[in-house]
Length: 400
Image (cartoon, rainbow, N blue to C red; front, side):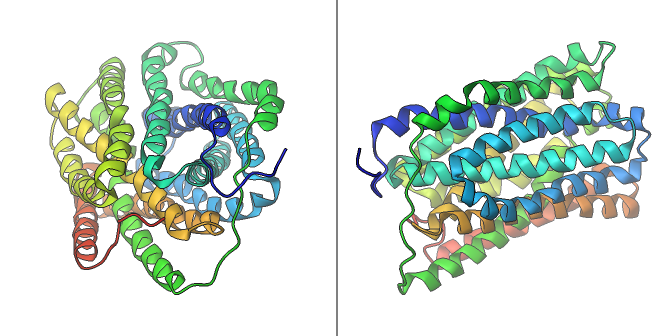
């Protein structure tokens, strides 16, 4: 059997790679949403002070900053092997968080989970960008993002039922161990069938300097935008519970509905990016994000919250998927992992910085609501920067 060539368009990886990363994405999203969804219950049970919520979220999210370094280190295992280990690892650490009896134990388990979840997401992007040609890449990345939404929907639908059981919020975390069992059972089959993408050697060319410049600009814009929108997403359930006065069943129903309707976002965005280019889609979503988040935290009715949440979900999903995909494309063959680590790290770091900043703004203003609205100015600034750079350069055009 000849070695795999640098051209990735073979039907065998198409059939087997997509199911692998889809399963990983489903449980990635399930584990990611739990802390935000269960925050009021975890806070009450573990006695977490209100002023510590923002820093706790920032600390947990900030642990994901280790993900780019872990990604680079795990290259020696092979991308597909590393993906399976990270999925199994974050599943076990999620269950461990459910057994925590102190805030320190809970935070430690969440730190491990967030690092491994972030590594899994970056590994998935490296695999997809390396395996598929540029003209069909967007819709495949979008498809995985859409399928990953299933994990979020499962979490929100299970929430009103499991929260009323004797296990309470802990049962939601214990459920996260399922993918570890699946990985153990299916590991040999996945490893024996998935074709590892080849890595071309790093070629020296005049384009490398331009690629590096674009990578830095994209990283700064994505990081700033994430600093505005990530805290908004994190505090949605708490805002609806504490300030809008919603009960858990109402929260779970409307957020699950919005999340389900947001499922096609990355698929539609990816398909449109293949047809008309990355730039117009990304710029539209950059603008939509802070506007919709600001509208959500000024609303309390089902219709207004649902509409604003839907717009925010679409913008977050598309910017996350296409922004990091563009970062992977910038590196070119042979440097995918490095460029993905840098741009993905900026997205993760921006989200962590935003949560810490929200905690500081809460201390100053005395209100999470006011702090989140102040953070929207960062999203507006990032949007203006994206428009300015894309107007003068080829930023957010096809890079590979």
